[in-house]
Length: 119
Image (cartoon, rainbow, N blue to C red; front, side):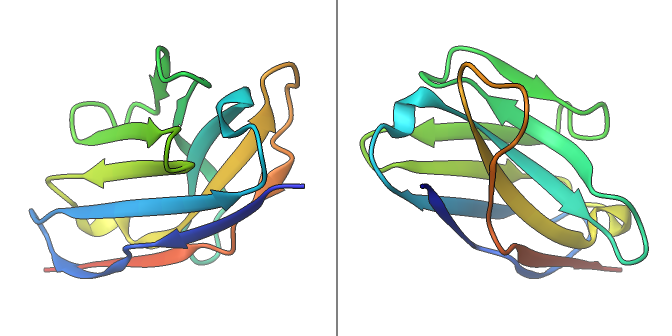
């Protein structure tokens, strides 16, 4: 079982930056692919970015490319999302997710952290 706890959300002006963190509990953090998703009110959950177990492979949604950076510290069992040049449409609840390297489905989810971008 893996527990995920996000932090770092808040209110920021358009063009600003935030760094989200997702701390995990449980052993073998490096055996999980980690990801960030967002969910805006009334909308479906959307993929933002993912990172492989040792951090060698990252994947980004088109909307995140060039603005967001996903990274991880296996020593701290934590995954990060650095968000720069934030836009109003980035306003959402951001969730981290984990799946074992051998699986295709995201098995574990955090409760989320709210990001609000104001004009």
